[in-house]
Structures are given as structure tokens and as C-alpha cells.
Length: 261
Image 1: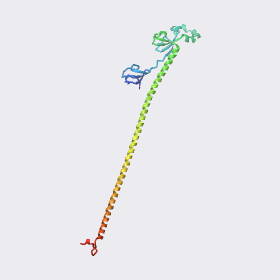
Image 2 (image 1 turned 30 degrees about the horizontal axis):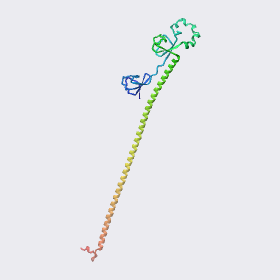
Image 3 (image 1 turned 120 degrees about the vertical axis):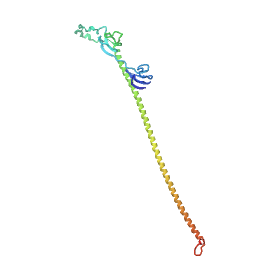
Image 4 (image 1 turned 60 degrees about the horizontal axis):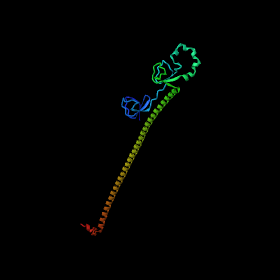
């Protein structure tokens, strides 16, 4: 599911889109194009229904008041306490303030509560079942209590969806952060490997240089050995000449025979 906020006729919605409208929360069961069917409807599933309207206590019924749906009044047809005739001067005498007329029994046993189910004409009595529905005092408070419970439950459902959405977003952020950390570790390891390769290449270059120097030194040594061998050969040749000279017979005058001219 994807949270989209308040529903708008100007937006496209994909399957799984979650919107709110008129106090309810709905999820798209199919793709809904612009100006498509608004929730609730066949294209939408109900996630959280809108809360029922709360009742409005209006006190004793007043024949001059225009009542609306869910307005609640108290009324007694038997006592006719709400009759317009009560406004006559004769009934405004001090005698009507007697304790008997203020006794609790008048409220508990003779008065009833009525709720508007269809907007009635002004002056329409609550006993007309076309527009009114009788309520006991218990029903009155039960309906008010259930309205409050429904509002609380709807709020809890909305909060749960919000927390679920936030958890999903947090999970995605955590996953992205984890992938970023893995990528950073991989990049660091790759950099370390590249640095090690450079170090290895540098070491190999140094080794090759040392090997070249050793080869050069060996060549110099070989050249020196060759020079020494040449000198040794020259010395040997001179020694051979000397030996040959000593071996020739001597002529008078000390010259060898082989050197005579």
C-alpha cells in the first residue's frame, strides 16, 4: 500500500493507493483515473469507516425550533409541558413555581427523549415517527458512548496505518544506509587493494633495478677479468720469448745464432 493523503479528483491512483476523504480511509482495489469514482465505491476498499455523527442534545422540545438529524430533545405528550399554551399570561403566575412542579418524578417517569431521523417541519411533535425516533435515557447515553468509541477506534486505525507507513519508510532508509555502508566498505577495500598493487609494482621495479645493477657489476667484473687475462697472456708471451732466447745457441760476441744477420 502507498499513502497518498487526501483524495483528489485531479489525481490518478494506482492499485494499493491509500487515501482519506470525509473522515474515512480507503484503499484502491484497482487503478482509478482522474475524475474517476470517489471513495467509497466499488473501486475502493474501506480501511477505516468514517465515524458516525454524534448526537446533539437540544434540551426540551421547542415548537419554534428547526431541528436537524441527530438532534435529541425531551418531550412528554401526556403532560403537554411543551405546548405553546404554556406561554399564556395565566400560566406565568407565581403558583407555577411550587415545589411539586419541580419534582424529579416529572423528568424520570413522564419525559422521554426523541432523536431526529429525518428533518421535520418546524413545530412537528417528536411523537411523529415519520421524523422522530423515541429513545430511552439508556439508549441516549449508549449512542453517545458508541459514537465516542467509533471515533477513538477510527483514530487508532489511522494512527496504526501512519505508524506502518513510517516503519516502511524507516526500513527503506535503513536499507539504503546499509547498502551505502557496504558500498563504502567495498570502495575502501578496492582502494586498499589498488594501493597494495602500486606498492608491489614499486617493489618489483626496485628489484629489477637491483638486478640490473648486479648485471652491470658482473659485466664490469668480467671485463676486468678479461683485461687481467690479456695482461697475463702478454706476460706469458714475453716469458715465452725470453725462454726461447735463452734456448738459442750463442755466437761469439754473445748474439744468438738465430739472430745473426
